[in-house]
Image (cartoon, rainbow, N blue to C red):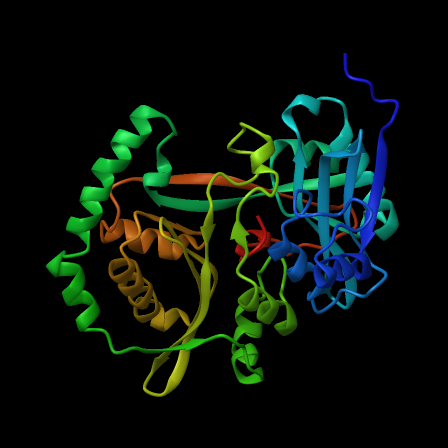
Length: 353
């Protein structure tokens, strides 16, 4: 029988998180078992974070953290909103309502009408519904080995798909298609004003139109995809089932000296994804071929996009042998205005997991 009489809920401000990172010492219970230093450093360097902002909340019992959540701000339509980026509860303590208590505790400090859900997991959707939020679903297109389930059968199929990946990467028809393309590319670690002026009119249907400051923050902080408390649980899918360091690059696609497309590419050893994608329709083939060249050159067995036209292009060219459409949920305040037919670019999955 677990005794919950000593339950304590703590919140940590940006100033407290910063002090902890600078000193390297635990501060009022805050340590790397609650939030990884990589994630914490990105939180405090968010362009819209102020020192008094509460960023992390955790539940303690017997001096041990058993659940936590974190949030970060963003300026949307001139107003400050808060994205909930992580949620963890030790398996032995699930079903006790701690995640709801945490989100409500942190959310009440921002105003729950100013909170947005980036995780889309059934558990968080239920919590945000409890807070009076609405729900919408968006499509994500997955290719390759990630289509298969985990376990012995999935691993066996994964090996087979890996062999197919090697064959795909030397496909002469695909290589010829790329060689005939006219594009050149420029890699970017920083989005300048000219590039952002290109992005803005192409983002009219975005679910969330990112500011230039937020996009540059995303490029600067490629988070390590890892559960901070992984040494405390046998559940591999708490909110991250791998330990991989992503690199992220902005890519300008040029034809005849003019920009015709821009995207942010995220790559790890196993997974390649396009998190933001903007292009002129008449040059979509050139832009898509530049992405195809990345796929072939990097050799990843998995690819993810939320752009239906790019998905159709990859299917038409048989770049991957397996394909699946997932429904990604997004919870938002009832008064939040969405485009009539929103598409999902990036979102929290670009750097927060």
